[in-house]
Amino acid sequence: MKLSKILLVRKKSTYEIQALEHQESNFLSLIKQNHESIKVVLKAHEEHSSSLENIKLVLNQKNINFDLVDRSSINQNISGYDLVISVGGDGTLLDASHYIHNSIPILGVNSSISSSFGHFCLADSANFKSVLENIEDDKISPINILRLELFINGVSKTDVILNEVLIAHPNPAATSRYLISASNDFEEQRSSGVLVTTPAGSTGTYRACGGGVLPIDCNNYAYLVREPGLRPKEVWHNTGSSLDKRQKVTIISKMRQAMAYVDGPHLNYPFNLGDEIIIQPSSKPLYAFIDSKVNEQFN
Image 1 (cartoon, rainbow, N blue to C red):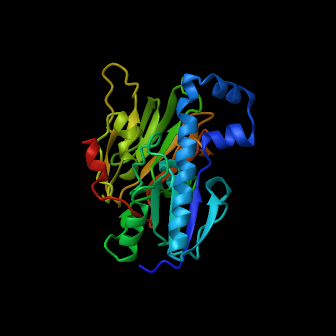
Image 2: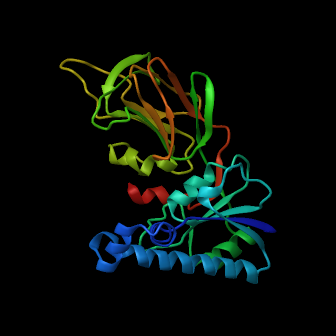
Image 3: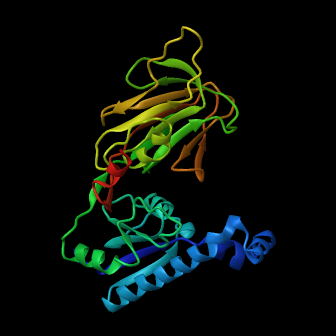
């Protein structure tokens, strides 16, 4: 694979944001105290900064042109690059993926292995050069990762959901009330929310709620009703299952206020009384340099 131009998408470390940029007084005080709550923050910042400099050094040595952007500053779809490299953890790759609507592949680099799990990250600072050379020599290829798309009242909100969608009342202590149809007819339910996951997202909240882990290169997706509030002798049929690419999940809100949370807390859409959500597989997979067996460690 010829790499002429690369986009580096980097995260800002917690230390950089709170201590250097905002100079948040409580945070600085905790740093001075060497408080237990922030002990790993400075180490993570140093690791991240060192990793970023190493990546830039390798690219300069190989005469590969690159642009560097903060993940929070991306505001349009990414184009014109041979490869996107996310420098951070899984959240950085996740954020960058929302702006990749084409076949540009992405490589995740775990920039702080002491503080980040890096599930999506094939590389870290130590092996970055060798991974990059394997990409250049076509010794490794990107895999296609299924993404989802979401419609509210027939209007497309996003067509590149990498991890999951949570439909729920915005107050976690409140009951979520809705009608749901997946592989069966519409059914009225009460629960703490409905989770719809991709294979990539199946190792996270979905697994924690009792769902089974899907292979990351699987073409199926799944949904799960969280903490279903069945009454005595009540039977529900739409509480969760694996779905193929021809199926969709439809939910109608019975809540005055509700939200659809996409890939975490930052991207969300109001889903109020009478609104209808449809979630289905997207026609735009993510092409990523990820180990195809990475999800097996959770089984």
